[in-house]
Amino acid sequence: MRQRVLLIKGKGGLGNRILSAVCGLIYADLAGRTPIIDWRDGSYAPLGDNAYPLLFDTPIVQTCAATDTAACPVSPAIWAGHLRCSTQEMIDNFMPEAHSSPKAYRFFCINLETLDVPEDIAVYWSYLPKFRRLSKHMYRDPRFSGRPLAGIIKEYLDRYFTPNDRVQGEVIRLSTQMGADAIGVHIRYTDRKIPLKAVLSTLRKRLKQAPDTPIFLATDNAKVQQTMKIDFANLYHIQKYLPANGERLHWPATDIAKIQEAENAMIDMWVLSRCVRLIYSRQSTFSQTSAYLGKMHSKQLDDVDRYSSKVLLKKLIQYYA
Image (cartoon, rainbow, N blue to C red):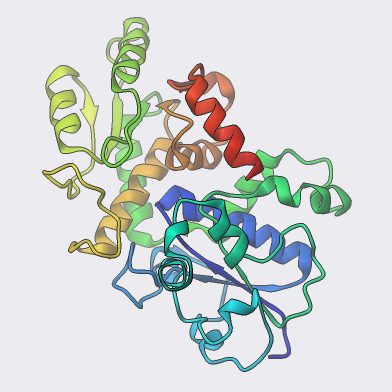
């Protein structure tokens, strides 16, 4: 291949892969590489179908298939001959014990601290965004130097992650129906759980100030949704599939209408971004992405884990991992 490509793989939930992809897209611009986003892992579209161009209106014109059989140098070298594989498959095949370890990231992702990677194809993936590793490059580049990171992330979200027509239509409809003063509440409560009591306590505190405020609930748990519908008036949520057993929804092995449910997750994320306030946990990249999309100020954010030493320590470790 004559042009240098950055193949951006996806792993994890929607917020994880969107923010991680933004990190990869920034690296591609810094390094002068053509980005290709590969979400064929089966989490948000049938296995083998690239969910990214199905869910978003994208300026990226090259397809993943263009790299599948490329006979050229690849970095990291372990990806040579395996460019069609997902990150999940590569870890399963070569380092199955490292799914939750930083070792997998270091082994299967290019070194972000150098822009001078000579190979024609470089492969990037990360479970969480690695903006810290790009900081020195961004500081030296006039396109990024002196700019707030949140503003840069917002720019890339707008450029590369414009939702498809169905999602945009539903977001506009719901936002118009609720009005401009809605409180957004994001509750993850399946494989990972945020402190539910703290969320409800914060919501009740806000409603004391304005009892008739509309509430938009985005959750992955059917019981949480049903309970809140009973306990809170003026509550809105979208119609989507929620597993009765409380298991994780977006996963390669799940048997659901994957594109439709991916779009539903996007509707949740984008409607949250239009709310005047967001009650969330910093554990969740899903709601963090909503905050970036909405250019939310800290005064608009109620982080129920802001004083959790366990969460703060985890975030610190992840930041430097």
